[in-house]
Image (cartoon, rainbow, N blue to C red):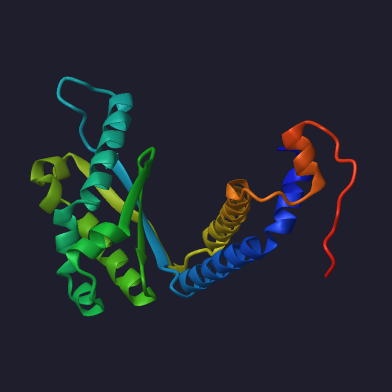
Length: 224
Protein backbone atom coordinates (compact mmCIF):
# COMPACT_ATOMS: atom_id res chain seq x y z
CA UNK A 1 0.00 0.00 0.00
CA UNK A 2 1.34 3.37 -1.00
CA UNK A 3 1.53 6.28 1.41
CA UNK A 4 -1.23 8.15 -0.45
CA UNK A 5 -3.55 5.15 -0.21
CA UNK A 6 -2.76 4.70 3.48
CA UNK A 7 -3.54 8.35 4.19
CA UNK A 8 -6.78 8.00 2.27
CA UNK A 9 -7.74 4.99 4.39
CA UNK A 10 -6.93 6.83 7.61
CA UNK A 11 -9.02 9.76 6.41
CA UNK A 12 -12.00 7.42 5.92
CA UNK A 13 -11.45 5.67 9.23
CA UNK A 14 -10.67 8.74 11.31
CA UNK A 15 -13.42 8.06 13.86
CA UNK A 16 -12.15 4.67 15.17
CA UNK A 17 -8.60 5.97 14.82
CA UNK A 18 -9.33 8.95 17.07
CA UNK A 19 -11.44 6.88 19.50
CA UNK A 20 -8.77 4.21 20.03
CA UNK A 21 -6.01 6.80 20.30
CA UNK A 22 -8.02 8.83 22.82
CA UNK A 23 -8.60 5.79 25.04
CA UNK A 24 -4.90 4.86 24.96
CA UNK A 25 -3.76 8.44 25.62
CA UNK A 26 -6.12 8.88 28.57
CA UNK A 27 -5.15 5.49 30.03
CA UNK A 28 -1.43 6.19 29.59
CA UNK A 29 -1.68 9.60 31.23
CA UNK A 30 -3.64 8.19 34.18
CA UNK A 31 -1.08 5.40 34.67
CA UNK A 32 1.79 7.91 34.47
CA UNK A 33 0.09 10.27 36.94
CA UNK A 34 -0.51 7.43 39.40
CA UNK A 35 3.10 6.31 39.06
CA UNK A 36 4.28 9.88 39.65
CA UNK A 37 2.21 10.19 42.82
CA UNK A 38 3.52 6.87 44.14
CA UNK A 39 7.19 7.26 43.20
CA UNK A 40 9.33 5.35 45.72
CA UNK A 41 12.01 6.86 47.90
CA UNK A 42 15.58 5.73 47.33
CA UNK A 43 18.43 5.59 49.81
CA UNK A 44 21.80 3.88 49.72
CA UNK A 45 24.96 3.07 51.58
CA UNK A 46 28.47 2.31 50.36
CA UNK A 47 30.63 -0.32 52.01
CA UNK A 48 34.39 -0.65 51.47
CA UNK A 49 35.70 -4.21 51.79
CA UNK A 50 39.28 -5.34 52.31
CA UNK A 51 40.99 -8.69 52.94
CA UNK A 52 43.10 -9.25 56.05
CA UNK A 53 44.56 -12.52 54.83
CA UNK A 54 44.89 -14.10 51.37
CA UNK A 55 43.47 -17.43 50.29
CA UNK A 56 45.39 -20.50 51.38
CA UNK A 57 48.69 -20.98 49.50
CA UNK A 58 48.65 -17.49 47.93
CA UNK A 59 50.52 -14.45 49.17
CA UNK A 60 51.15 -10.85 48.17
CA UNK A 61 49.21 -7.61 47.85
CA UNK A 62 47.77 -8.63 44.50
CA UNK A 63 46.15 -11.72 46.01
CA UNK A 64 44.78 -9.60 48.87
CA UNK A 65 43.16 -7.23 46.38
CA UNK A 66 41.66 -10.10 44.40
CA UNK A 67 40.44 -11.75 47.59
CA UNK A 68 38.82 -8.49 48.67
CA UNK A 69 36.95 -8.35 45.37
CA UNK A 70 35.56 -11.85 45.93
CA UNK A 71 34.60 -10.93 49.49
CA UNK A 72 32.80 -7.83 48.24
CA UNK A 73 30.81 -10.00 45.82
CA UNK A 74 29.92 -12.36 48.66
CA UNK A 75 28.83 -9.50 50.89
CA UNK A 76 26.66 -8.04 48.13
CA UNK A 77 24.92 -11.41 47.70
CA UNK A 78 24.50 -11.84 51.45
CA UNK A 79 22.88 -8.43 51.89
CA UNK A 80 20.20 -9.42 49.35
CA UNK A 81 19.58 -12.83 50.92
CA UNK A 82 16.48 -13.84 52.84
CA UNK A 83 18.45 -14.31 56.05
CA UNK A 84 19.71 -10.72 55.91
CA UNK A 85 16.21 -9.48 55.02
CA UNK A 86 14.81 -11.35 58.01
CA UNK A 87 17.47 -9.79 60.26
CA UNK A 88 16.65 -6.32 58.92
CA UNK A 89 12.87 -6.80 59.26
CA UNK A 90 13.27 -7.66 62.96
CA UNK A 91 15.05 -4.42 63.83
CA UNK A 92 12.80 -2.19 65.98
CA UNK A 93 12.79 0.80 63.62
CA UNK A 94 11.99 -1.39 60.62
CA UNK A 95 9.24 -3.25 62.46
CA UNK A 96 7.70 0.09 63.39
CA UNK A 97 7.88 1.24 59.76
CA UNK A 98 6.07 -1.91 58.59
CA UNK A 99 7.96 -3.66 55.72
CA UNK A 100 8.07 -7.44 55.91
CA UNK A 101 10.95 -9.76 55.07
CA UNK A 102 9.57 -10.30 51.56
CA UNK A 103 9.16 -6.54 51.10
CA UNK A 104 12.78 -5.94 52.11
CA UNK A 105 14.08 -8.61 49.76
CA UNK A 106 12.27 -6.82 46.94
CA UNK A 107 13.37 -3.36 48.06
CA UNK A 108 17.11 -4.06 48.52
CA UNK A 109 19.57 -4.29 45.63
CA UNK A 110 23.35 -4.33 45.79
CA UNK A 111 26.12 -3.86 43.24
CA UNK A 112 29.90 -4.12 43.36
CA UNK A 113 32.55 -1.85 41.89
CA UNK A 114 36.04 -3.07 42.74
CA UNK A 115 36.01 -3.43 46.51
CA UNK A 116 33.04 -1.14 47.13
CA UNK A 117 29.56 -2.54 47.65
CA UNK A 118 26.64 -0.17 47.03
CA UNK A 119 23.38 -1.16 48.68
CA UNK A 120 20.29 0.58 47.28
CA UNK A 121 16.95 0.59 49.07
CA UNK A 122 13.67 1.64 47.44
CA UNK A 123 10.58 1.93 49.65
CA UNK A 124 7.25 3.72 49.52
CA UNK A 125 8.14 6.30 52.18
CA UNK A 126 11.21 8.15 53.40
CA UNK A 127 10.77 6.69 56.90
CA UNK A 128 10.75 3.10 55.61
CA UNK A 129 13.74 3.74 53.37
CA UNK A 130 15.77 5.35 56.17
CA UNK A 131 14.92 2.54 58.60
CA UNK A 132 15.96 -0.19 56.14
CA UNK A 133 19.19 1.60 55.18
CA UNK A 134 20.23 1.94 58.83
CA UNK A 135 19.32 -1.70 59.47
CA UNK A 136 21.43 -2.73 56.45
CA UNK A 137 24.31 -0.82 58.03
CA UNK A 138 23.85 -2.90 61.19
CA UNK A 139 23.81 -6.05 59.03
CA UNK A 140 27.19 -5.03 57.55
CA UNK A 141 28.61 -4.49 61.04
CA UNK A 142 27.28 -7.88 62.15
CA UNK A 143 28.08 -9.71 58.92
CA UNK A 144 29.56 -12.64 60.87
CA UNK A 145 25.92 -13.73 61.40
CA UNK A 146 25.66 -14.38 57.65
CA UNK A 147 29.14 -15.19 56.36
CA UNK A 148 30.37 -17.00 59.48
CA UNK A 149 33.00 -15.92 62.01
CA UNK A 150 35.93 -17.39 60.07
CA UNK A 151 35.10 -15.53 56.85
CA UNK A 152 34.35 -12.35 58.80
CA UNK A 153 37.74 -12.56 60.54
CA UNK A 154 39.53 -12.78 57.17
CA UNK A 155 37.94 -9.58 55.88
CA UNK A 156 37.02 -6.09 56.93
CA UNK A 157 34.02 -4.01 55.90
CA UNK A 158 33.38 -0.37 56.69
CA UNK A 159 30.44 1.82 55.75
CA UNK A 160 31.94 4.84 53.99
CA UNK A 161 28.78 6.67 52.96
CA UNK A 162 25.05 6.84 53.50
CA UNK A 163 22.69 8.88 51.31
CA UNK A 164 19.49 10.38 52.67
CA UNK A 165 16.24 9.09 51.13
CA UNK A 166 15.15 11.06 48.06
CA UNK A 167 12.22 10.65 45.70
CA UNK A 168 13.15 8.59 42.63
CA UNK A 169 13.39 10.39 39.30
CA UNK A 170 10.34 10.78 37.09
CA UNK A 171 12.46 10.34 33.95
CA UNK A 172 11.56 6.66 33.59
CA UNK A 173 7.86 7.52 33.91
CA UNK A 174 8.13 10.09 31.11
CA UNK A 175 9.95 7.59 28.90
CA UNK A 176 7.33 4.92 29.62
CA UNK A 177 4.56 7.41 28.77
CA UNK A 178 6.18 8.25 25.43
CA UNK A 179 6.55 4.55 24.60
CA UNK A 180 2.87 3.93 25.42
CA UNK A 181 1.79 6.86 23.23
CA UNK A 182 3.87 5.66 20.28
CA UNK A 183 2.55 2.12 20.65
CA UNK A 184 -0.97 3.47 21.00
CA UNK A 185 -0.67 5.42 17.76
CA UNK A 186 0.69 2.33 15.99
CA UNK A 187 -2.17 0.18 17.32
CA UNK A 188 -4.79 2.75 16.30
CA UNK A 189 -3.37 3.00 12.77
CA UNK A 190 -3.14 -0.80 12.47
CA UNK A 191 -6.79 -1.20 13.56
CA UNK A 192 -7.94 1.45 11.07
CA UNK A 193 -6.03 -0.17 8.20
CA UNK A 194 -7.25 -3.66 9.14
CA UNK A 195 -10.83 -2.43 9.36
CA UNK A 196 -10.61 -0.89 5.92
CA UNK A 197 -8.96 -4.02 4.48
CA UNK A 198 -11.81 -6.21 5.73
CA UNK A 199 -14.42 -3.85 4.26
CA UNK A 200 -15.51 -5.07 0.79
CA UNK A 201 -17.13 -1.77 -0.20
CA UNK A 202 -15.51 0.37 -2.92
CA UNK A 203 -14.99 3.90 -1.72
CA UNK A 204 -13.53 5.80 -4.69
CA UNK A 205 -12.53 5.53 -8.37
CA UNK A 206 -8.93 4.73 -7.57
CA UNK A 207 -10.01 1.46 -5.95
CA UNK A 208 -11.88 0.47 -9.12
CA UNK A 209 -8.82 1.23 -11.22
CA UNK A 210 -6.58 -0.74 -8.91
CA UNK A 211 -8.90 -3.77 -8.80
CA UNK A 212 -9.91 -3.83 -12.51
CA UNK A 213 -6.68 -2.58 -14.04
CA UNK A 214 -8.59 -0.14 -16.29
CA UNK A 215 -9.19 3.59 -16.05
CA UNK A 216 -12.49 5.00 -14.83
CA UNK A 217 -14.00 7.16 -17.59
CA UNK A 218 -16.93 8.65 -15.64
CA UNK A 219 -18.68 8.49 -12.31
CA UNK A 220 -22.33 9.01 -11.44
CA UNK A 221 -23.27 10.52 -8.14
CA UNK A 222 -26.72 9.99 -6.67
CA UNK A 223 -28.75 13.05 -5.83
CA UNK A 224 -28.92 13.98 -2.16
